[in-house]
Length: 459
Image 1 (spheres, helix red, strand yellow):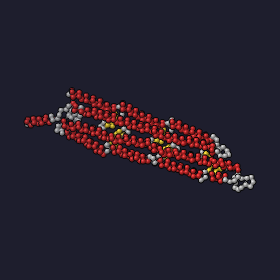
Image 2: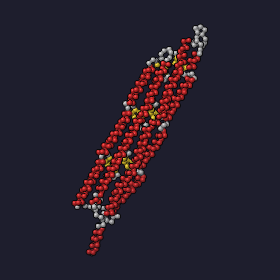
Image 3: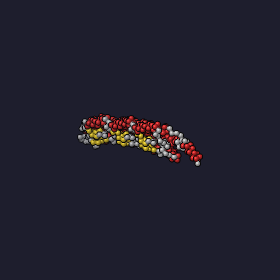
Image 4: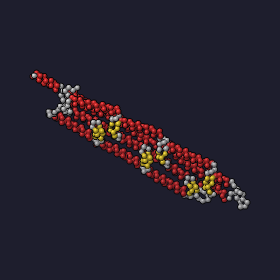
């Protein structure tokens, strides 16, 4: 019996001595890992902060590019003003030649009847209205429709740029003061301040544990786990392996969710779906930019390339119609004898003069002849004025048509910015999976080392 007890005691001692001695560094290993974890999170915080700043800078750059879009729309508006000035100059220059005798009234196509001073006032009123409108544009008060934004004025754009600058300054302040947050695997939402506190708290805990060991006061079964069996520790190891396997499965299925500034929580599948949809929408927009996309241009409002083509064709048809009517001698102007066209005037002028006695029939009263001759002189002037005014409009429409696709540039730039930022978000998943894997593998390695060094019979 005594021999059996001795053998049992020896076997028990051999079993207990199979575990390696616990060192101070093993005791504080979780705190060291926690500090490393927080340091990794600190690096990721800085990287995501720089990424967020880049996003803000790109948005600001896009807003700055809108200055060019506004300049194009202002240039379009100025073309309209130049056409209006030219039209007024045309009307005024032709008014004296279109005076209806007798009397001092003139009839000018597209304006109508006017007396001395009427056409000058009409020009002055137009120029005054243009000057007021140009002043409003110069002060940044006038709104223009910018593709990708909507209605925008110079003041509104300045406010956007100021907001961009404030957002960047606020972000920099948040980064500098350590209050900006990200969601980091294994830690949740963290900031510079919380990570600093994490490192400080773990350093303090390491010092406390080192002091306990140096005083001989530290009690342990398995460091940082307490009383465990091989089975319970193996269950922990299996759980971490399952987490690793699930992480790989989620990554492969593109269902792993990560959080980034602007985008919030996203899956890779969702990001790729957004990129595919945006790419398709951009391609369709580019294909339709010069034909069916609607833009807002001066004096017309909302229109498309196809609508401008139709308007140009219709206006050219009108000019051809005026010239045809004039060529057939059917263009009528007011005369001292009423509205007459060239055919009627020439037919009347071909008649002999009426005489006091024995007048031929038909005949033309002598006092009517100078009125008809005056009308005949004014017909080509009126036709030329009518055609010149219409041609001004055609030239303006053609100028719009030639440059209308430029108005799509802000919207296309917004597509490019969106695709670039979502493309970078797509790349974030690889880094995020690596961070998740690092956290799990670190925990798994620690548990496996405990199994190998501290658990009797552990492998």
